[in-house]
Length: 342
Ligand code: TYM
Image (cartoon, rainbow, N blue to C red; front, side, top):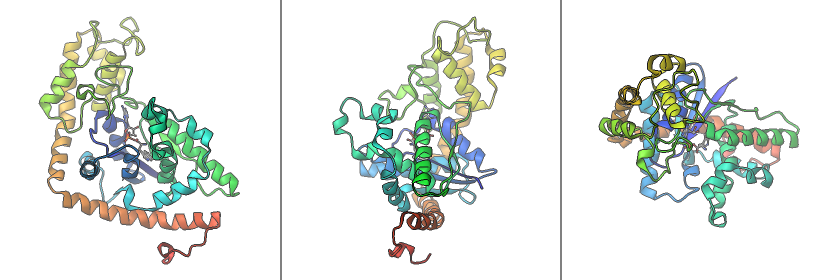
């Protein structure tokens, strides 16, 4: 059986990369998969979050899922801290994962920066919590952007080592679902850096909640070069020589579900200003209604909370018996009250 699991951190500034690289695919996958979508608040606190903002941002990610079209009747939507199995299984995985594996994680190195000694322990063991998120449901497929690929490889390593150590095939070896289009949306100011929630420049990203005027302005000001739009022949550059230009083509393709060759034959050789005007139109057409619906939902937090409460109960119902099986495999006695119904 296939089961999809994915998550987004409630750390504010949800942007076009989160939408195109992840959330848009969440919607598509629910057509023919059982899907579980989490707001990963436990992951968020690996770096300091102001408590009121964390609550607000948690609801905002849930609102983004709903506004984008994730259907809470069909898919499970919940916040991670509501289902304690995640933290409980993460501990077991902390005892399976090896220091050497975590030492290789590039995201830890980037996020901890030069002052590694001062990073939280949580940030270091972040990937074993992520493995627990996925494997608590024995999920088989995980839609993510390209930047999460290494974490999913670690999830596979943890599953394999657990299976080997305990002589079982209990955990599936998860498949990352990284789609070709917009798996790595780049900053609007620097085509060699990914678009990121934490970039200090708001002009580097299009936030899902930006109003139409802001979207148009950010796209007009997005960094490009004096050359016209690439036409696919290679004479007008390649993604490595013109990263900003190709990034905007990628974004346009993903937003409008166009193929890149279609776009290049339509716009190739034309001035970038013309292409940017069309890109801005498509971006406003897509993000405008999404932002409006998010604002509507955020106006009624009780409706969002209802979805999260119901989702947490459904998630718990799947994950708790799985944790029970894991306790049996590890040799823990299931004397705790959380197992009394099983
Ligand atoms: P997070 O919150 O940083 O990002 C959420 C999703 O958005 C994708 N993404 C991008 N895609 C394309 N271009 C970009 N510039 C871009 N920036 C972000 C991310 O790849 C991700 O899919 N560790 C995860 C959250 C997580 C998770 C999980 C994901 C926790 N547990 C279990 C899957 C399964 C994260 O920090 O995502």
